[in-house]
Length: 248
Image (cartoon, helix red, strand yellow):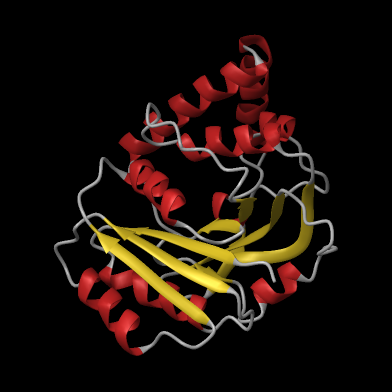
């Protein structure tokens, strides 16, 4: 059977991590590994992880974790890729959850297991800090996804973008805020098959990014788009983004 590694990178995530731990534990799909890479949290994150590792790991799920210094989010994610043993990788932030207890099972039954695709993707719901549904993610996943689709922006949330481990490469650490955008494009360029599950896969915690980080992230994303799609195409697409925002 196909095994899924769920990767959660944490740092001082005591207030949000438990819902993620619970969501992975309650999945009806039996072949799961939850891998947590913590950056030496100073709150109760490590104690919470240890409690789940010792007391609440069910027979169908395995929780592995490490807490040690890293060079930031994407360095920790690279570390996790190297530690993973699953056939596919899913990155789930602390506070994010699967949409329902049977989400992974339904996802795994959405394709022919004799010809598993390189990438799976789906929709994302935005929830508040209590897990209540707010709205569906503004950018809707396209019916057919290719590496050129991200000319229109990050149409699929990183958490709802599931990649074969053997296809995966490290995140580019030269990008501090948008390396996931670059990574997704690279994975799609390598992939021979990309499958739309037509499912809502993830409940994404609605967190406000600081203005400083958001501006830096957008600047990085522009550089990434120009690298893959060309400066002229990227410039005109960004004009359309501004018009679209004004119209809405």
